[in-house]
Image (cartoon, rainbow, N blue to C red):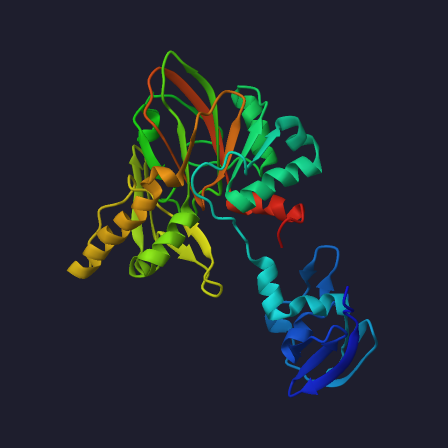
Length: 372
């Protein structure tokens, strides 16, 4: 490993440039250094929190500095003293810092049965390695399958809690549904459902969606359809860049209405990171689009053209993974990325599941050291 020792420190205006043994250097402004003082009066090490309000951090200058191989020592104009280790400072090379925080999904289309993690529930629940396999599959492909789960709501809930915790919405926490119309949603029918993301009408859509087929008797059909939303958006950007750009800027309004509820939210169908241009989220649901007024005819026509061009990728069977969910297999998918649907069916079909907030499942992935 190349040395990260501190070789030299130089003053540049109101900043210090730290030169490391691996040949890299990082410039730290004095305001940043004072804000990141780790002494006991500036930082609560036991809670990993700053001790001072930003308005209480004095606008001071560096009067003296020195270093050894492992630390930089600073004396300030108010006589405060700070020290910074090379392990701490070396984290903040901006390009590397950004790169370490980027998610790196593996785009896919078609059948990925042999790529996603399929794991027995006991291994997932009772071992760190098993948990890592599931969360890595979600980070890579947006899908994981957990097998050997008891075909009950309670057994499914245990899995949901291990994925980050049950998210409560207007549909409840854990939910179970058939063709009985408990909510004003096409999911509560036996009709086919085109590939879509859930909760486009929520301020923040659910992070994960968990589905478990508890029963399907005296009938056929009901195959699950999954599509990588990021793959479709990437293809749209290549072939129809104008439509891709439109869907990253235009705020499409979605809504959900039933007695006692009226959810609505407007956001781009395709969300990208403003710095890296990485795809962040897909909000695609043809069913939940709200009636909208348009500023002009060109915008209206762009809306329909771009949605149709994106929908072609999601409806193309060659981009879809279709399989039959059976009792005992819990399907987990990233609702920010993966679209899901189903074929029409007959007979008695009972599903259960829940949502997990994105903050909560990414929290688990970070705690497993899979992401920063």
